[in-house]
Image 1 (cartoon, helix red, strand yellow):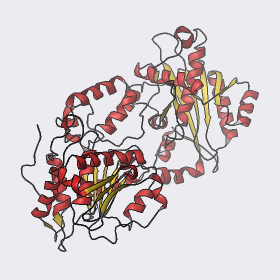
Image 2 (spheres, rainbow, N blue to C red):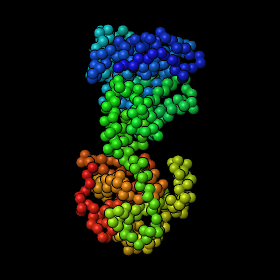
Image 3 (tube, helix red, strand yellow):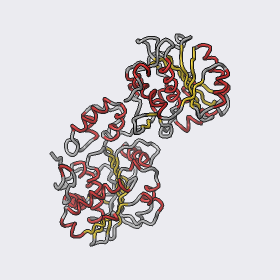
Image 4 (tube, rainbow, N blue to C red):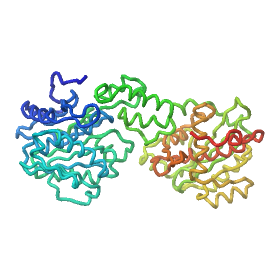
Length: 534
């Protein structure tokens, strides 16, 4: 059942001297509703605007300045997938090209790549062919991805990805589809900064689902939209709409789904959302995709590998005193000399009821702490005061200090092996070997990393890990982005993980050795049941 807008209320972002022009808004709505839907069960039916869509159209096209031109020249619409995003974008592209009374209007379709931009173009092309009045007046140049409106010489053109190197556009409209996939801000800047100066009322229509990169142009625009919505900023030219949920909303609650999906039950079947939710509950790796695409939440990474609620359930106390003399395995991850160094001990269980105890140690150069807190906005100073993060003198990591520290640990705990990244600190590894430790090189490829990475998530889900809630390790676990190969092998991706993950990598390496060798009284877990394939 289609929901229509019963009573229109002008946007709260209407400027004091602007007016709502019902005639201009009616014209825009009537133009769009002469078009037809092009896909699925709706194909061929008139494009009757759903209440939330009509609200946007009336706000953007009906709110006029005293000059008679539109108040808003940027509209930012953030909404989950399957809510009729591409259809609305295509309809607006045609409205700007054919129905906006602009001579020789240049309207451009932009996306991260030509294929993505073509999605909106193909919908617009089908809308033209299904509307006899437009079909007579429009020429479609399919090979060039161009639609020309003959009476005014206006056109809608899909831009290729290399356009960021070009200038000289005289833009009347830009449709930016899936802004969150833009690799950088170059294309956005070229299309929105100065390209519409010669036009009286250019419109930059940005429509996207939430993204996962907070260092992106989309996050920048999202933050601006959020600030305007919350009253922290004012920009009378910017029109913000965000349909989504808050981080602390329960993602499994159907009421929350409704809040994020204004077309739920119309273009989005509730059964589809429920099936996706059930699947995400079974597989933690799908949770992020569900929250991002279905609930429009900005998530940290494309694949949220370690759900923090699951990790937190394993915050069982770890008493270093009670672990003295026990067999354990070390994982050493040396980052750059100015960064965090991680050394993690994993103690395998003594019997079936026992857990894998994790004892992590972290070091950072003393002189860098204040700088790092300011730059990274991470609580290094607090962790240091609490004793969770150790410092070494100076502005680079003092490896000699760490070697001595590990040597002392070896007197307290029975460290059978220390696994290390074979591309890392050659000298330090030699020194540790000279102290009598068994040092084992550990490759960072899929072959070596996948089994223990899968085991870690499995043991965490089973609550067979005890980490004592160590905050530095928790932060690093939350930062992990996972890369998957075609065979389904996984490993932490240091490039994609924008924050530090050294402690997590060291844990995985140490866990591998503990799983292989056990407590000295048991055989390898891999021997018992082979490698884990999830």
